[in-house]
Length: 169
Ligand code: NI
Image (cartoon, rainbow, N blue to C red; front, top):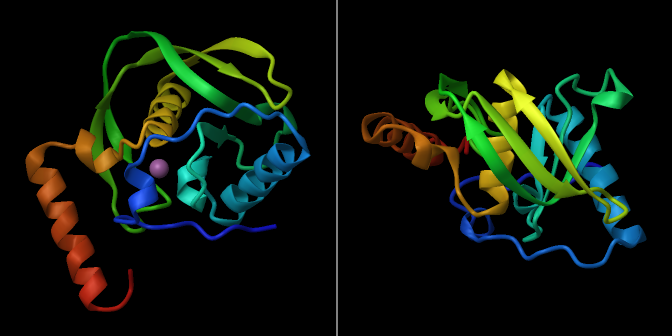
């Protein structure tokens, strides 16, 4: 089932998600629906707050549905180490049309639980590193516009206000 993606400034996007404690069929259904929603939106990652669910959960698939082995489910994730620096353009499904450069670590190590509750650790470089940081920010209630320079953030917010006025946001 394709879920509705909420847009900024929906309050749920700015709230830290609740830890996931029940690894039940409802959770697995939510994960499956989140992957389906990501593919339908041609995204590479989606966090639960973006579908209005305030939980510490995100899905990532850099292959956009082409490689089943590329599916990553992050439950109660945290970044346990990071290295280097990237400054690349990012977008977000909750900010259609907005793309700006943000500073991220070049590589990170993430600790998270899978759909069954099993803890694992995983390394990510480059795009995967950026995706890990972007999605883990979402579960913390942090949005990528607040990682931009003040100038780029103001530009983005002005663009959003214009789209809101024009009824296209
Ligand atoms: Ni996002």
